[in-house]
Each structure stands twice: as structure tokens, then as C-alpha cells.
Length: 275
Image (cartoon, rainbow, N blue to C red; front, side, top):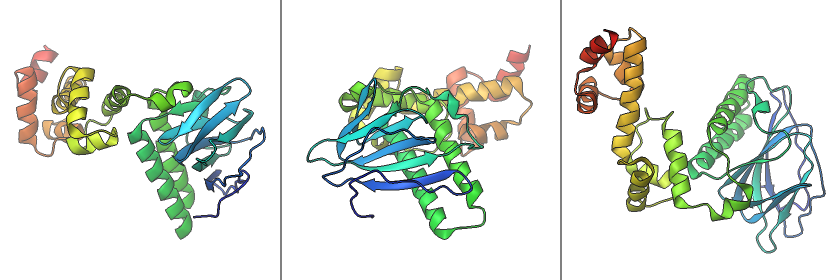
């Protein structure tokens, strides 16, 4: 860990246009109004404070992610006695693998979903690890990891920056259900799903039913079967291939779940729909 700093760190960009900074704020940290030519993804690890622009202010505390567009005048203000420790992913144009213009160019974008923070944290760790090894394919590794992170952020609903520190459990679960709509194929357990939302299993079970009207297992099965139906209807793919893509480890399990939800086998459903 670098020593605490009293002022913002300056990035050094390589061929990929990507730089990761670890900024551990000292108690006397001060940041004047500033703007950059590059995008910044701010990951709050510990401490609390505010991100201020000339027109707004948003709360900062873990778990919070903030995208700061280039040209936006801003500054960080630490809470007295709770200095921030942040990781900053700096992305300099021309970044080849993502359309950053999708994020609003006139204000910061806030996210506060634990699973999203976890994915971003893992991505930054991977970049730092690869940079320490300096492999020949570092350019492709860095741009690939950052592209995946940004595509994930584009799918997620931003938070109101004035309500970050009052984020409710149901909001985190609703965010998780949106994420599951594109990640239903994973082999997550309910314990891991609850942990990603920052909840115990019992509370997670209550809230997932409140948010979706069914249990976590039922909701994931619903998403899997819906995707299987799309593939059965619009492609000539084999049933085993479809089962694999939807997240089923065994074809027989896929048949049981599909029949329980539709009343038909996959091939019978395909035949009926195509008539």
C-alpha cells in the first residue's frame, strides 16, 4: 500500500490508455477544483466524503462506484476523521473497446450495488496483477477487462447520488434481479447470491420474493427457460447445446425444469410453436 497522500495522484498511461491509481488519503488531503482529459472510474474502499461538481454533490462511501467524464470540473471532500481510500481507473482516449459516450458527459454517474463493486474490485485487481507481470499481451488484457467492466456498468441502473448512504436492501435485491437477467447461466448458490447483495440468506429470500413474486431458484429457472424458448423458436440448435448455454449442467435436469414450466418437452414445445 502506498503512503497516505495529501493531494491527488497523477496517472501515467501506457499503450492501452489505462491506468489504475491507489489513493489512500491523509487526514490533510486537499483537492482543488480540477478537470481531466480522461474518464475516471472511482471505487471507494473505505472512508466517506463527497464528490462535488459546480452544480451538484454526491455522497461517497463503500460500496460506491462513480464514473466521472472528461472535462467535468470536480473535487473530492473527505469527511473529517474518515479519510477516503479509493482506487481510480483512468481511461484515456482513444480507448478502443467501449463507447463511453453512453455515460452522461455533464455529470458523474453513481452506482452502489455490492455485486457490481465486487466485480469492479476483481477487475482492478486483475489489471494490477497483470501489470506487475508485464506480459506481452498486456494491452489486450487491460482493454478486455475494462471493456467488460464498462459493459456491465452500462446495463446497471445508476443511483441517485444524494441517496447513496440510504440505499435500502430491497434496492440492492432489485439491482441483483436485473443483473440476473443476463447472468442466469451462472452456477451461483443462494448463499453467494445473498452475500453479493450484502444480506443474510433469510432476508435475501424474503426480498427476492417481494421483488419477483417467486423464490430465487424459481426466478432463475424462469429466466433460463425463457431464454431456452427463444433459442428453440429462432434457431435449429440441438437441445443439449441450448441446455448448456442456459446454465444446465445435465441435459436431463434441463428437460425436467423445462417441462415443469411449460408442460412440454423442449422438442415438443419447438414443434408446437413452429406450427
